[in-house]
Amino acid sequence: MLIPFSMKNCFQLLCNHKVPAAGFKNTVKNGLILQSVSNDVYQNLAVEDWIHDHMNLEGKPVLFLWRNSPSVVVGRHQNPWQECNLSLMREEGIKLARRKSGGGTVYHDMGNINLTFFTTKSKYDRLENLKLVVRALKAVQPKLDVQATKRFDLLLDGQFKISGTASKIGRTTAYHHCTLLCNTDGTFLSSLLKSPYQGIKSNATASIPSLVKNLLEKDPTLTCEVLMNAIASEYAAYHEIDNHINLINPTNETMFPGINSKAKDLQTWEWIYGKTPKFSINTSFNLLYKQSYLEIKVFIDIKNGRIETCNIEAPDYWLPLEICDKLNTSFIGNKFCPIETTMLTNILLRTCPDDHELHSKWNILCEKMKGIM
Picture 1 (cartoon, helix red, strand yellow):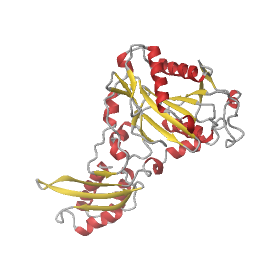
Picture 2: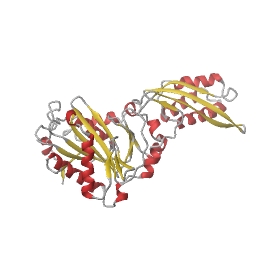
Picture 3: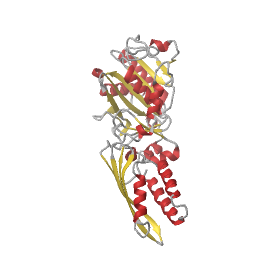
Picture 4: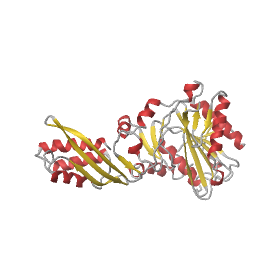
């Protein structure tokens, strides 16, 4: 049963002394099932952070159900350039987010269900959560062959991944979240989670590619709504709580004091890209010049998402060494992103307004540089 949160019953939930008086009250006795009315990835990730930071989970576990409009979410310690096709994402208007938990990169859309299990640190148990999901699936369709793996994924028919896991363990609280592929756009998923960038060297956590399949392909009755209700029912039965899915608005500051600030922080370039572990790029590309090709070599070190060292090597007959050095120096300290590179190009072009040939070469180089960003 879906129950919208009113201002009245928002005061009947659970929190500890860290939460301002306007927030949840510590009155729920056994636990809670929440579902977001938002499909914004940053808002929903902010709910996770808020619950983790503020709720008193002692004896009061929480299940949070949420879905997002098309977006790609990388793990806390991952490199987005290594994990996904950023240029395609920009073309298609797909959001990129970095979550607070570890694990691999995932694609979200409205055909994917996200489940977050909140407990105290001592009650944290990923396998038990996945068993609960399996029981819920089999309650709807007993013939489903779904099993949890040692990597805490869920496999359909022993080979197709339908759920991936990540987690965050704090000092006293923890959460385990997982995806559940119901009717996700498989073409988008495979194309967006395939990096086209060459020559990246990084110690960042790398995702492990897997064969995936939608549950709806197995049984057309397994819609997101059916599955969310089934999981909520199984969760309520397991924890002996009311089988009520409480609808929440992640932008409600009265219910979640300070949450919009959390959502804003999750959208910043400094968090999404700047938290990427240090990496380097060693690549090259060919340019057509006077009916033959010449090779441009590029060596870049990136730290906190900014270019720390840059060495673009071009044949001296095509681009004089002093001009190349000027370009290299200009890149240092700038964000490793196409927008900043475009701005840099425009500034450089103004330093020599009458040299049209140089303008052309700089434009070609910068377009190639943006292609690896």
